Every structure is written in C-alpha cells, then in structure tokens.
Length: 492
Image (tube, rainbow, N blue to C red):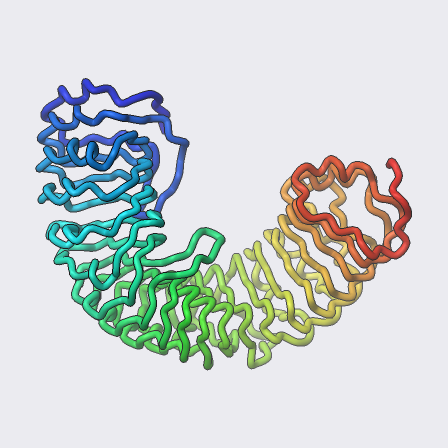
C-alpha cells in the first residue's frame, strides 16, 4: 500500500467532473476497522471540495481534518450527488455536521472512531436512502436507542453504534428494519470488558429480520432469556451476546440457524443443558459458551465437523467422555478450564493434531501427562495448572515451540523444564508449586528473550540466580520465592 505524505492539494477542486475520490489511509470492512498504517495526510481546508459537484464517492478515512464541525459542514453541503461518505478516524469532534442531512442521496455514512460528543441527531432518521450508518467508537456520542430507531430506513443493511454512550433498551420496533444484515450495538473493547449501556430484554421482534447476518449485542446489561425467535434468523452468520445478564436456557431453536458460523454466549447467567441442536450446526467454526452455569456432554457435538475453536470453560461436564470417541472436528483451540473433569487426560485429545491452544486448568486431572501430547506438534499454548498431575514431563516435549506454558500447582517432578535452545516466542512460563529439581541455567537470559512472566516458585531448586536474568528486558513478573535450596545471588 502506498504511503502519501503532506496535505491534500487544493487543485483537486479543478477536476469538476470527478465522481470517485479516495485518499483513505486505513481500510474498513463492514464497519470493522483494520488499521494498516499511521496517518500521513491532513487537511485544514476542504473548500476545494465545493467545486466537485459530480462527486458520488468520498473517502477520507484516516486523514486528520483540522477543522470545526461548522467548517466541515460548509464544505460538504454542496455535494448533493454524494452517495458514499467515509470520515472514519478523521479526528473530528463536537457535533455531527447538520449539513449532512442535506445530502439527500446519501446511502453510506461512516463516522467511526472520531470524538463526536453530542447527541445522535434526529435528522438521521429522515435520510431514507441510508444503507449503512456506522458511528462506532465515538465514546461520548449519546442518545436513546429507542429514539434513534424511530428513523425511516427501508434499505438499511449495516447499523453500528458499538462503543458509544447511547443508552436505553432495544425497542421491539427494531424488527421493522427488515433489510438489516449487520447490527452491532455492543459495548466491549478489545481485551477489556466495559460497562454496557443497553438494558432490558432482547425483543422477540428481532426474529423478524430474516436478512440479518451479523448480530452483536455484547457487553451490555441485557437481561431475561434469549428469545426463541432468534432461531428464525435463517441468514445469521455471526451471533454475539457475550457479557450481558441473560438467564434461562439456551433455546434449542438456535440449532435451526444452519448458516451460523460464530456463536458467542459467554459471560452470562445461562443454565440448563446445552441443547443437542447446537451440536448439529453444520457450519459453525467458533463457539464460546464459557462462564455460565451450563451442563454439557462433549459427545453432543456430533455434527460440528467445521468447528475450529471451542470454549466451554467454567461450566460443568456431566458425562464421562467415552475413551473410544473420535470427534467429528479438528480443533485449533479448546478451553475446558474449570469444567469438573476428573481422571486421566481425555483420550479424544490425541486425535486433535491441529491444536495450537489447549486449556484444561482448574480440573481434577491426575496421573502422568501422556506421551501422545508430544504428537500435537502445533501446540504452542498449554495450560494444565491447578490439577493433580504427577510424574515427569515427556522428555521429547518441545518447550522451545511454546508461547505460553502454565503447569503451576500440580505434583510434577523431574528436572526444571527449561527450553534447551533459544525460544524467541515464549512469553509465559509458570511451573511454580511443583516438585521440580535442578538449577536455573546460567544463560537463561538468552534462552527466553521475550519472556514476560517467569515463575519457578515453590520448587526444590538449587544453585544461584543467574545474572543473565538481567537481560530479560520484556520481563514483567518474576517469582523465585519459596525455592528449596536457593542460595544467595552470585555472578554466573
């Protein structure tokens, strides 16, 4: 991708018949931002745009517009033929320019990732040609969702108010926007759950939007049950209701959404047994039902052959897995943390050769770590902490290939598991509260150069603390406490 620098020249205004203009420095797909480069262009004067009266497409995403809302509105007010307006990440503030309402042909309005701090203007509801309205990540943009949805948008397909300060409950009239494909009024930051603003129940009228493909209501304070009518969304591909206060059982009607690719219901108060219909979804690839009060049997997922990522953590496994069971799926990520799993390692894992992330922490696994774990050659994140595993690690386990290895609070023994060669990607190594013996290698600072978390606490180690630990510039947590025979620091 080219990287242009400097200001946008005013001479662009001389191209009076121009219909398509894009100088965007970022790319957006369906209102989801993908940052590709730092901003290089800026403009404090858009008066040249006034001459482009044939312009239909204007994309300035990522260009810093050093001007007031009034100045921006004056520049846009002459573009009566404009269909597409993208001002994503333009460092805009104040109120959304009122002049936009005069662009009567506008079908796409994209204003994400700015700093607008006014109410969502009511005149947006009078723009009947809108197909996309995207205002996400304007965290001070306010309003009542019920009032906003009074708009007359017979053609609206994308509606995104995620990460704004809009409040209220989702009104039943949302079911009247029958053209919707993408609906996102979620309240979750990447990696950080933020208190949501939407309250009340999920209206059953959502089931009337048969064209809906993307539904995200995550990170709000929605309560009540998931309405069975959601099972009528026959075109739905993505469903995310994560981090709400939803209760009751998962409706079996979700199994009717045969197009479903992603199902996220984590961090709610759902209970009962995961319905068998969920295990019949033929195209689902990613499923996260963690942090609920659900009960499940793994062999219920009998037809999810497309499944790649499964997280059922902090629920309860209610049936032992048949040792002869061979899953229909080949997972890349599996998390069964705190699922009341007891006994030896589930044997079905030996068939999951594509696994790169496995979390079985906080269960009651005992016995040795099986030798077949070594055959999972793609494995680079492994968490077996808080179990009762015993014995030594398989000698052929390639620790140098891991990003994270967490074995703490078990009953493992043998020599301290340290990579034998440099492990440039290892970020977390926690083998604390075991019975490992040996010494910390003198050149550990060169073996794990990217480590951020390192704990050998509560083991039977001997020797001293190598000075090469001082080379670990990315280290944030170091725990060498309660080590059996650790002697005073010395230069290695």
